[in-house]
Image (cartoon, rainbow, N blue to C red):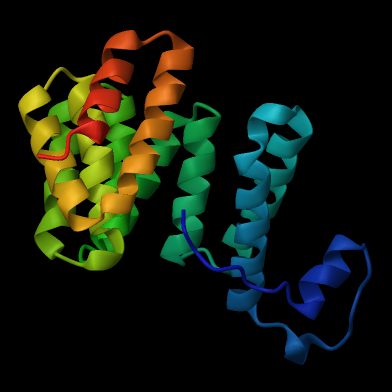
Length: 206
């Protein structure tokens, strides 16, 4: 996720060092929750490097959830963690809840759509991507085009993939570099068909 960093509150830093404070009036649960969330996501981004990173991600995200259980950003981060560790039912419950809580936020529809795509539920994923595009907000529109395109080609829907990537490059030409990097990932995984498609479409200027 692309979000600016939030500085850890004094209370959070004291907690990390194992200290205590009596000045509870300075503790802001929302600030602490977002700080823990970002710390947890940082560990989650490195989860494949060690089991300790997975544990640290879980610890910080759980704290974030305790501080602000109904914050959709925190909920999204927890869903991403559950998805990573294979707790798919729990992850989907959260994705459903946040898209209902904030139906006008396309970011949550994009994440839910990507989750559904990963679970081989393409038609359901399409609905989430389409809902995001209908909202027409620039802050997540490029992400929707890109993720929808990947999902479509993974499911053999070349027509939709062509359309999504065409719209993506018209909307944000710099995204070609993202697609090329993703093509390299597919190539390294041995999925030459999707890799070749992504290489080709990222070079197509028409």
